[in-house]
Length: 458
Ligand SMILES: Cc1cc2nc3c(=O)[nH]c(=O)nc-3n(C[C@H](O)[C@H](O)[C@H](O)COP(=O)(O)O)c2cc1C
Image (cartoon, rainbow, N blue to C red; front, side, top):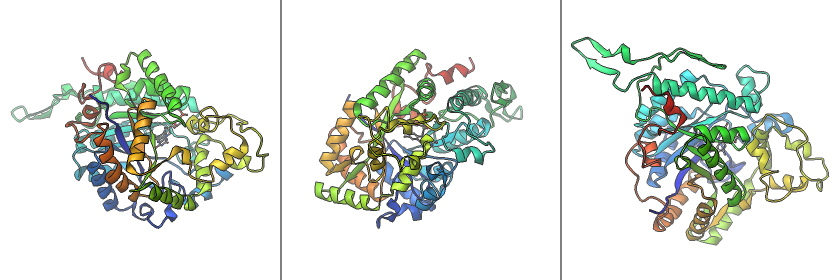
């Protein structure tokens, strides 16, 4: 059977996400409507019409304030602020869809595992097994200060915490309740058999949790685990725990390098590399004709905000403002180590196809990066997507938006039918939970080779 593209809509419950300055575009609605339930309900219906696998909700717990050592550039342009809690939207969106899944981002650095496990069990029950958890370790210094720390916990230690966090979560989801604990035995006046509900008594380096878990087992028990991390530690974590992994890179070759590396690492953890789905970015501007698509892209470029793009780059821990007075011919190099995310930092150095100068880097922020966009008519866009899919060896994409809902509507109306006609995109959903849809050879629960399954009661 031909491999079919997995497709997620890359979203955030905020005024703006990655489309810097685009709120000024006359067709932008999201910065007004992101706080209305109807906007998200309509989006859920649209995505299910387009047979999207999931809506992927990014999330952060602070404001980007590394650039210019100020929060003002982010706030001024609505860079991921104002921002609401994504988990609270899922029930409403699930109620108008049958198959669309929901990947919700939660940080292992700031939220306690006990409450988080209950949140995901609840969502898994209410959606009938359509949830995933995007596990992040967080990179914003302001988030650390919002949660009572003076400085961020060091990059690598954040992953150590995440590793133990996942063990606690698996104990709550996989071990605490036996499948047949709810007996509803009227004769013996027992709704739940206390012998079948267990404390977990986790006593680790970072967490102490007695249990039992408060929710009874849901269809998937453990939600599908999503993760994105490019650093050594990030890739190691992903290879051990994640089922869907986001890999970015400027060329299909670089993406393939990361994908192969993660699959190799997964094999060393005793996992079947086929049980990992690798997802990369997709950014598209499509219209009926090439000329219309190019004109649309140019219109978008006119309202682009370089300041917001630079502010978002602060996720790396580096302040681009420090380079603004430097000689533009100097090679671009980082002068210190930061505790930010390595993924962003690598885009301008080791992941860049050639060595960049300070001038190249500063220029990059001035406009939408044309190289990372597919712009064209439906056939041209489908050709480029098919090329990326085949060249990079990924299993699917996270579709970025610039102006929503308009860009997503165009994608669903113009591109999806073209991909379906080529046999590289599903015409119908499979039945079952998200895990069953993604891994048709498995079932709703974690596969045997996943580290979470070793916590199951024998
Ligand atoms: C597609 C994608 C989505 C991400 N979503 C989030 C997010 O919602 N919240 C967050 O804090 N980090 C997010 N990240 C960042 C990663 O979780 C991670 O922190 C970052 O890649 C740095 O990790 P590293 O230092 O291991 O490279 C995302 C990254 C990618 C590629």
